Length: 432
Image (cartoon, rainbow, N blue to C red; front, side, top):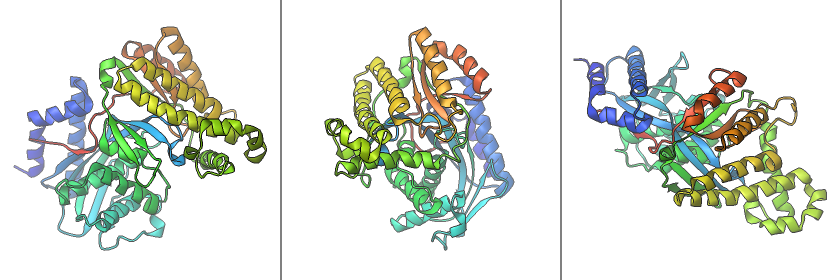
C-alpha cells in the first residue's frame, strides 16, 4: 500500500483521535471536520510531491489577554494559545532544499540551504522567514536539512491571532523533529522565529506571539530584560468556567497604521526620557503623576496618558495572573474590562487619528458593553495593536447565540470567531 494511504488509515487509530480531541475539543462534528482537513492536506502533499512517509505537525495561533502595548516598553503581557492552528505534512529530502506549498498560494516557496544570507528582494515574504529560520538554526549549532512540506492555516492573515508567528514556529518545529530529535526547546524555537521575522522578514516584532504559540496554554511574559524575558505558564482551566473567548473582526486595514503604532511606543518613551529614564518600565506611577505639570509642555498630554496606561496595564497583568491562579474568574473579568477602558481612554488606540469617522472598534465595544450589561456578565477590550481589526470578548456559553447573531448582522457573516484556549503549544501529531 502507498505510504500516503497508510498514513490516512492511521486517522482511525486511537492515538490520532486522542490528539485531535486534545487540540480541538470533544465535539464529534468538529473532529470530523479536522480529519477532513488533514486528509485534504495530505492530498495536497501527494499532488505536489508524490508518495512519501510523511509526518504531521500543528502550531496554534494566539490571543493577547493582558498588557496592551506594554511589551515594547519592557512591560508584562498575558497571552494564550488558541484552537485555530497552522498544520503541515512534511518529509525529509536528501538535497539541501526546503520546498513548501501552501493552500493559499499557487507557487511554492523554495530555499536553498547553501545560501542562508538575507536576500534583499525577499523582504516581507514567507521565503525570507524560511531562510532566516534555517540560518538561525545553523548559527546556534542545530542541525538543518532539506524537506518538502505542505501547510494549511486557520490562523487567517489580519485576524489578530498572529498568523506569521504561527507559520514561523511551525517551520522551526518541522526542523526540530526532522533533524534534531525534538531537542530544541520551545522557547528557543520562539526566539528563532522572532530572529527571522526581525532580520529576514523585516518586521521589528517582539517575542510575545512566538513564545505563546510555542509553549501553549496561558502564558505570562515579563520583558524587563527583553533579551532574556521571564515567562511562566499560568495554571487555569478556562474551559471549566463555561465561558468562551471570542474575537470580533470589525474590518479595516492595518496597512496605513504604521505611524499610529509607532507613535504609541515613541510617545511612551518620550515621557520616560523626560524623567531621565529610557522606557516606561523604569518609572514609577507617583513619579509620573508628580511631574505632569512639567511634562505637559515637554511631551504633550497624549504621551502622558499613554505612559499612564502602560503603568496601569503593567500592574494589571500581575493582578490577572494572581486572579487566575487563585481561581477568581470574576476578578479576572473585571481586570479585562479595566484594561479595555484604559486602552480606550488613555492609550487611545481605538480608531485611526487620520480617519476619525472609521470607528469600527468603538462601535463593536459599545454594542458588546450594552449586551453584557443586559445579561450581567462578561468582559471586552480592544485586541492587539488596535486602530482597526479586532476586539476580544469573554461571554458565558449560554449567551453566545444571540451575541454572535447581533455582531454578524453588523460586521458580516464571518466576523465572529468563537475560540478555545489550547493547552498544547507547537507539536508533532502522533498517528499510532
